[in-house]
Structures are given as structure tokens and as C-alpha cells.
Length: 128
Image (cartoon, rainbow, N blue to C red; front, top):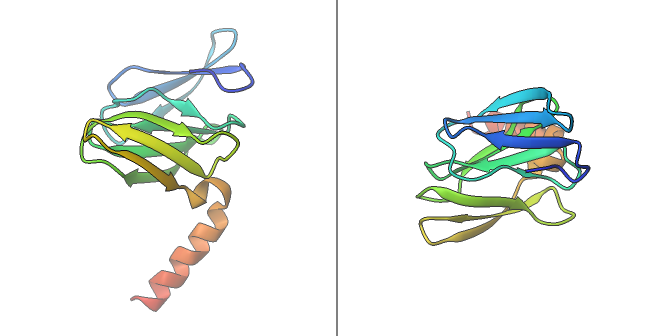
């Protein structure tokens, strides 16, 4: 899968590794998923985020440049076949699965990770 600029390509090897390549074929990074991969990778429109689905029903989203996981969530009970960012919106995604469901969901950390961390800290203090 190419990013929208055509400068980077993401490929998977099935064991849970996503490789990021430059346009000229040089390896630019490696992302390791939380499980065996079952879908192809999908870039956000700006190319900064990458989403993937696992055989265990998880959706994982990474910041391509830092390699950090932005979101890890379960939306399905069976392997995820496809995950895409909605066009022009890096905070909304859709996924389809072998469990015969389609999920549309938000990724608040995809657009404002600092706010998500602040809310988690507040919740932790309120719920010791």
C-alpha cells in the first residue's frame, strides 16, 4: 500500500511485521503488531498514520514517523479483513471482519493524543 504522496510503501510479512519502504526501495522502518496480521496496511490521507487489522480482531494504528502505537482496540471477534481511514478524516475509520460485521469507529488519539492522555489521567485520579 502506498501513502497518498507516493513516497512510502507499507508491506506486511504475515508474522506481525509491517515494513515501511521509500519510493526508491530502501527500508525506512519497521512496525511490529500485537498479533498475526490479517489485513493489508492502510495509510491516513496525510501519510502520517498507518492502520492494520489482526487475526485476533484487533485494530492497531501507528504513527509512521515515531513507530509508536497510537491506538490498539478490539472491534471484531474474528480476523479483520480490511481497515481504512475515511477519506479526509484521520480520526474516523472503518473495518470489516470474518465475524460478518463492519465497524465504524473514532480514534481520538489520531488527532489529539495530548487530550486523550489528559482525560486518562483525570479518569485515573477520579477512579483510584
